[in-house]
Length: 533
Image (cartoon, rainbow, N blue to C red):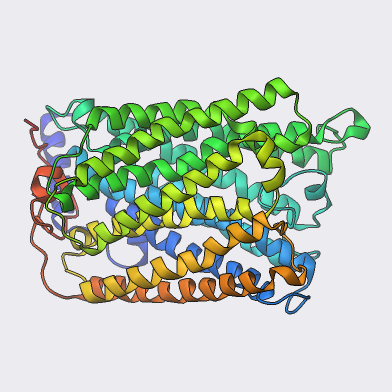
């Protein structure tokens, strides 16, 4: 290419940039801009939250009273299965990926993500995946109904929906891996001059570690579901005892993926909370380096605890001991994080804006979920808890007031930066208090139900469980409906309102590069890389 050609090419490129994004639908289908893609992920995740949430409300409506009331038992089981698959892979993970897409370039001073086309592709794969999964509900025989873990032999009895569900998981997994590669390459290669690894914001750190987890475990899950596929269609017997296979082997492979997976959902949440608490406590984060090391230790330990999901399958005693003790061990770095967040607030000048309220609720309620996890980690005690509502209570406490509350905190924290408008704080406070009260009304009674022996994934129950189930269902409908307020707040904020300054929150400037940019953040960020002192 001659000098004149290169100049012409550059000029054309500049010209294109001045115009900002393309107009109309093609902007969204073909965009490679990290902000557009981040926005699409967040909107997609919100839609999935509502679809998955509606399924949860079907479950809770059925369980409002004892006896078979509303839906067919098979359909009930489909709801429990698809609700979980949608919430895990379609709501929580895309929400954190959307936040990563939006915020990592802003936080590290990069112009965009490192691999923009792949970024677009990984988003649209997700849309394809969940369209398949939701369409599987309309197949003869209904959607998958074996629980989200897809255990054989039960899952192999699924009808025509089976290949759709498996294919959907493959696509979602491929999307996750591409997203993770993109995040790692971006963080490693595009940091602003002067930003060493130990100067990165914690949200970036937690995502870097999460991305490695994703790349490590998604192929394992893909392998397990492919073996299910060949067992179903091609006469292999990986998981059938009759042909020399073992159904428990599937559980081992699944949970080797499944346990790191739960940390894939919670580590970005830890990062978000570590961004928010220092700003509203007006103090630097206490123990930055120890937070980084704690995150890395959690990621490492997440690989050696998987069989704590399987204490009741007839494991040798040495196995039970190993998995019990390694599970206890993972509580240490998690405890370090909780203490550091608490120490950050200690003697700080706290104000309670909506992001901070959600971060504090996260801190308190996630810790409850953590403690019930330790209870289940005790192998002999787990024989009492296993497959009861106590398990349901535990993982919903770490996923809803844990991961989901952190995502909501992040939205309230960065929304003014995204839209350039301030949202209605009064409504946001209402949204917080309704969510916080109803989420506890929804999930706390499930601990009692579980300890009393109510089994999970069951559409009917004996009358001694009736009262708490009713309370739990009222909590569910309250929590679900209060999220409509969340949507209203976001839409209202996007459409207009008071103008946001560059530094939206008092003193935020000391806590990240994103607050040096004007609000709304320009379509192309950091054409010239900022220098970090």
